[in-house]
Every structure is written in structure tokens, then in C-alpha cells.
Length: 388
Ligand SMILES: [Zn+2]
Ligand SMILES: [Zn+2]
Image (cartoon, rainbow, N blue to C red):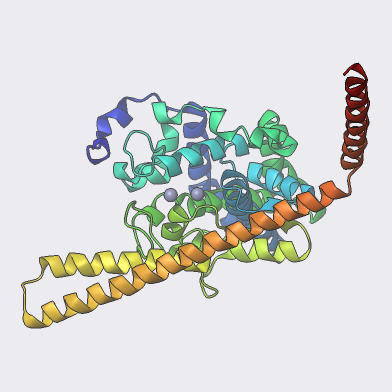
């Protein structure tokens, strides 16, 4: 398969994406030179640090909760004020417009790990998946918005796409500068809430494409490189449960257990309490357990196949087969009950439609027509009898 034959030369030959290269070079250089120089000569107030964290979380959650789970995966619905918040702070994170980001991300899910067709394929290495992919214009990076037609109906998304540059400049320079002026220290705010926040947030969110495809466990699927890792989840606003996410991408949660550190999941749930988010989608627990058990069976069978045969091993094999039968029976029973549930729901809908029809104006008009036809029949019959 072509995803096994990474050809780094293809990346080297691809033309440089100038705006991205300039942005990353300038922000990295500045954070390594201008920032320490400024910090050496100035003190940062508590207010400047506070706004650093406010902007860090606002722009981070706008990528994970907004760009990713709301728009790219439609894992829940959001009211207008929340969508505007995501649109503004998403522009602050400088990771392209919602439309372009989501289009690329949907391609990533569709072609995950494919060396040529996954825009940030880990098969080309850590650096490429982390940042390198943005510095080169490869064919898979060509913007094709045909896979985000649903998002083009959202006026908030389209507004950001049209005014992206202005919004990005205002949110990164204008807003921190203005708030800084209110506190009498615009320079410190530009350094902390502007520059440092931008670079930190960049790398935190880039870890999702790099580290979360390399380091961690795979409890749900081994069909791709995505991993679950609590430490990465801590720095990626909860997106470190990437193995779960690649199998169940429509779930608004990535860390599905209550103890999983998934800040974005808690943020979305909290917003639903105040009515800003709704229709949160969850994968049924049975399906999650089924995926985990299937992984366990596959692993056990792999081990048994490679181990030298012994009497004890034979016994384990038999027990495993017995468990497999029980598992299949449970899955079949679940499928049967699910079908029954769907049929009952369908019947309920049909009954409700029939009931509404019974009381409708159309039904009454149809009755009138039926009566008219009956009268006509009698008239014609009478005429017919007269001609006899
Ligand atoms: Zn991924
Ligand atoms: Zn995703």
C-alpha cells in the first residue's frame, strides 16, 4: 500500500507555503529573542498573566470545542453567541479559517495515515505532522471546500472566512493591545496575551496531530495510529484521547470516562447548562464496550497464535472461544433489541401521523369529496336505470 512507502522527497520538492512559513518563522523568532529581552527589562503584572491564561483557554477551546468538535464533526449544536465566540477566538489562534481548517480535518479523518492523502500524515514523521505540513504546499493541502458545504450555510463561518485577515490581526494585536492600554501596560499584554499565548497555543494544538498519533495506548482500534494519552490530553484541552476520537468522531467527548481529563468535554457540557450548547451526541456505552472487547479478543488471539502450544494454552484457548460465543450472543441480543426499539419508534411516528391526519382539514375535505362522489354515483345510477 502507498501509505507504507513514505517518500520524503515529495515533501522537499513541494513549493513553500510563504504566508505560513513567514508566520511561524516570525512568531518563533520573536518568542525566542524579543520576548526574553522584554521579560529581562520589564515585570509582568498579575493582570497580564491573567489575560494570558484567559486568551490561551479561549483560543484553545475555540479550536477544540469550536473548529473541531462543533464544526468539523457536528458533535453538538451551538447557539449564535457561542458560535461568535468560537469564530473570534478561533481567528486569534491563527490556524486558518473555520472552513479551511474543517475541510482539511475531514480529509485527515477520511485518509488517516495515508502518506500522500492525509494532510498531516504521521507516516512522514513527527515534525511533518506537527508543523512541517503547513510549510509546504502539497497536492493534499489544496483547499477543496466541497466537503464542508454544510458549514457554508452558517453565516458566522462565512463571515469569518471573508474577513479572516482583519479578524486575526485584531484578535492578536488589537484586542490584547487595547486591554493592555486599559491596564496601562500595552507592551506586556502584547508580549504575554499576544505573542507567548499564540506560540504556546500553536504547539499545544499541534500536538494533537503529532504526539497523539505516536505516543499512548490503543484501547479502541488499531486500524490507525491514533493514541489515547492522559498527559497529552492535559496539554491539548482533552484532545489527547485521540484513539477513541478516530473511531467515534461524532461523540462530543474525546475522554469518554468521567475521570478522563477532557477540558473541552466539560466546557461543552457546562455550556449546555446555560443553554449555549445543545443536542450533545454520545456514542452508546454498549458500542464503546464492544469496541474495547473486540480489541481484547484480537490481542489475545494474536498472542495465542504466536505462543508455543501447551496444555495450559489449550485450556486458555477453549475459555477464550467460550467467551467469544457469549460475546457474540450478547451482541446479537443487543442488535435485536435495537431493531425492536427502532421499529417501535417508527410505529409511534406513524401512529402520530395517522392521528394528526384524522383531525386535519385535508381529511375533512376528502370526506366532502367522497360524499360528493357517492351522490354522483347515485345520480348516474338513477340515470342508468331510467335509460333501461
Ligand atoms: Zn488524528
Ligand atoms: Zn477529529
